[in-house]
Length: 375
Image (cartoon, rainbow, N blue to C red; front, side, top):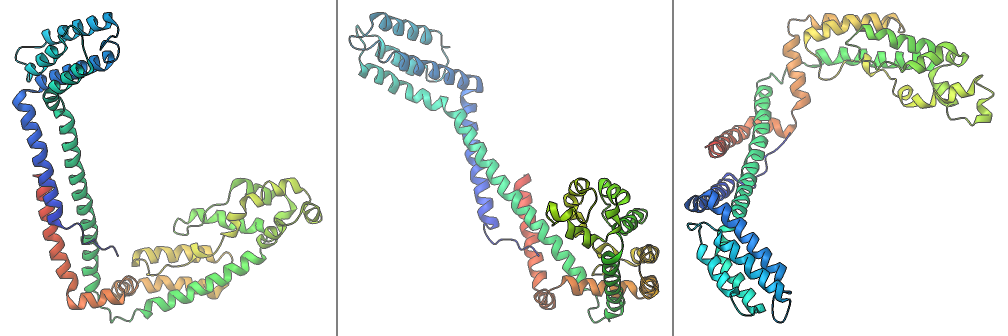
């Protein structure tokens, strides 16, 4: 069964989420102090200003292109004059503009302008900071959700262990398992003999009849395979023989099969189906099904098994129905289920109460994390 990892613990998860939310709130507060639209305007203005500086840095500086120099000054002045008076850090744009208001512009003037815009750039970066902060919150909430899902799965398992722990493990489960084992052994042997000897045509006809018995879960044969065995002499051969033919060379196959092309395009293609055509759909699983399920299954098995097995095997299938009608069937079945599901360590843990301690601890952790996640 699943165990819940000890790390990260609830406090580590809680601390990270609280810190992430505080970081996001701090950024939101800074944005709110300027106004969403104002920060957006600063972001656009800084982006435009830096783009201008980068575009003209080489052509407008020193003894470069005089037209580029005039163009940079003109565009930068136009940008700054178009900014709202109340724009945050507007004076930084004006300082950058002054750095460019020279008879000639040097690389150092461009750098001065960039430095002047750095404070405005901090405002412009608030949207990116908010995105990063939100991602941190999302990651922290995802970690808590993942932890909660693991806890829920483990608590479900502990609930199941509690149920199994209340079962009478001293009940004589062999009363159920031995008749079922006898039937399973008999039907496996009978079906293997049938599969080895019956013509493939007859075997597939039998499998097709089981579609009327929903509790007998044979996979139905492919239509082209059924059509082949019904309409070709090779269909009179048993399945093991057809599988042996499928491994023959073309020259050798000519001696055993009339239409080798039809054989090659049908039997080898469905070899996996024929290989897996075994008795398991006719058996009863362990642990046993409920009484109602076993009664209905017994009725279907009697009808199906009677088509190929001897009366002794059919009688064992019929006995399953009588078994399901025992007054103590469910009590014995619950004990058989517990025997199947519980390991020795789990039984010892149930005896000592270790699982109860784990259940209480995880329940407290679930409550703490859920409260933190959804607050």
